[in-house]
Image 1 (cartoon, rainbow, N blue to C red):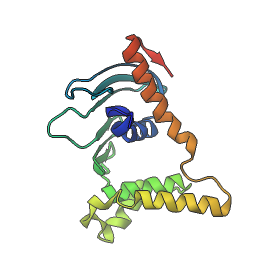
Image 2 (tube, rainbow, N blue to C red; image 1 turned 120 degrees about the vertical axis):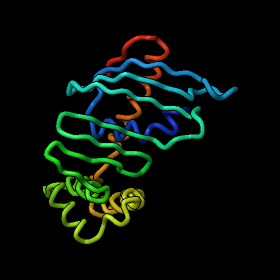
Image 3 (tube, rainbow, N blue to C red; image 1 turned 135 degrees about the vertical axis):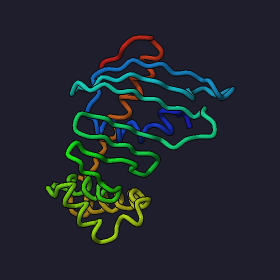
Length: 190
């Protein structure tokens, strides 16, 4: 299919990373084929990223690790921490002591994307009182269906979908910059 650890499997995590942390300003990367013989793409990639907002991050992607691990995204900042593993939010903790369940965070993100203003804390309290904490694993289960419904709605109403095509170019640009940096050994600015 032409894609290695980043282009094929890692693109979704790269997309989520840049959506949460903001645009990448520059990066320095290395890639390798370490665990698979006779493939033409990388099975390991590591990059150091500098974001436009001043944050620094690392990106590691591999299809060579035993026995395969779920994608994981950790974000640690001065105001809180988020850990997403696989399709589940494992941790969302804010400096003020707020902890948010997986479903509460997911519903809040959709609300904000649609222009809503409900606070994470208020949304979580509402969901917890309704017993939503009993199924935190269902956070992303309907994501594809909801995205398709939104796309169909956009066609019928002649409006933009919540996530438009230009959004898909951002993670692609980051991945192509990783490949360029690995090839040249130099930092690449985006």
